[in-house]
Each structure stands twice: as C-alpha cells, then as structure tokens.
Image (cartoon, rainbow, N blue to C red; front, side):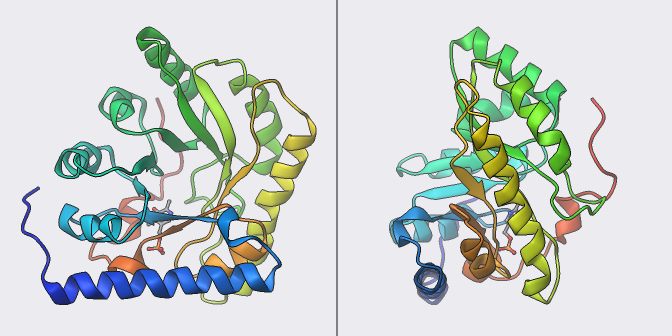
Length: 255
Ligand SMILES: *Cc1c(COP(=O)(O)O)cnc(C)c1O
C-alpha cells in the first residue's frame, strides 16, 4: 500500500461527511432519549487507503475496523504513529489468526467454537487477551455469517470458559433493504438477544456492547439500542469492490 496522500478536496469531503454522520447520530440519540456518549462511531475502512483513514483520525475519530486480514497489517503500519482503537469486523478464517491478533484489540465477528478455541490457544500461549463480540445473524439470510439468535446462549456459555477472550456483547449486520423500517425487527432482535444473555449474569461476560447500524440504517440501530455504529460509505464514499467479496454467499467457512 503506497502513501499517496489525499488532495485537499478529498480531505475536506471526508471531514464534512464525518460531521454529517455525527449529526445523524446525535439526532437519533435525541429522538430516542439516549446519551450521545453512549454510541460510538466505528469507521469501516475496507478498501480505503491509509491517507484517507488518516484524515478521519486526525479529525478526531478513534475507532477503525477492517474486514480482511490482508488489509490489517499494511494499514496498521502506515498509521502506526496515530492513536486509535483497531477492531476486526470480517469473516475470520482460523489460519489467519496469527496474522490478525497482534494488530487488533477486539474481534467483533466471533461466530463459531472452532475459531474461539484457536484464538484461546494462540492468546494463551502469549499470555494475552482480546475483546470479542459474538456475531449473530438476525436477518435469517443465508449469506450472512453469525449464529442464529437461539444458538447465542449456549455459545456464550461455552466461550465464557475461554479466559483469553473477553466477551463484551453482540454484533450483527442486519437485514439489507432500501426501506430501513424493514431492518428494524432484525436490529431489535439483537438487543433482545443481548438482554436475555445479560440476565444470565455469566461469570466474566460483559453484555453491554451492541454493534449494529451502518450507513443506511444507523438511525434505526441507535433507536434500537446500538452502542457502536459501523460506517463506511457515508464517510469514504462508495466502494468499487462489491460487498459480496467480503460477505461471501457460501455461508460459514469450514475449518
Ligand atoms: C462495510 C461494512 C460496514 C459499513 O457499511 P456501509 O454501508 O459502507 O456503512 C459495516 N459493517 C461491516 C461488517 C461491514 O463489512
């Protein structure tokens, strides 16, 4: 990845976009009687070059996430002089764990036990821990990764035994639709699942985070309780690579 820099117009556009998104978040918080501090903005930076990400961080953003392991390290290195939190939100194959773990503090896409076991093993060896969110498929669409809501309780119980994994809450992608109201039930389902899991009071399990809401549905997600909205397009513009590249249609990887 080369540092080509961004022109002043592009930089200004990114800053403007951030303030528009921040405004949308604030209005949604006001409408739903929530403290604006209770929702964080995560920049979903797949395909975005480091200079553009730098503009956003220098404008005050502090939370950035990638979808593909291959993009994680080059960007980490290009932006190593900046202070920000790095998460992973993509489908993680077990054979990529070693290439990812050194560079992120939270993996939001934990969706299977085989992966949890391998993460535990790798982290244990280094005497390290990582935060995780459990990814739930709330829309029932085959193409989305994540556990079914009914599987979440048993899965959370199992993962709570892995002391290198600090469970913080849940993540979902939600239903894709042009009518955001149609996304609401899937987003609400994540909150209901979280509330149920929270009542179990499992040892060492935090259930505060709800990572949901993207460019199209962040308002609805905030109204439904989101604590992390993940935004790419509204800040960096449309991506050339189709999202199906990141969310393959073949279901969960076998490993
Ligand atoms: C790309 C992506 C986002 C952001 O999507 P936009 O519609 O561009 O805001 C959020 N979450 C995940 C998991 C993504 O891959």
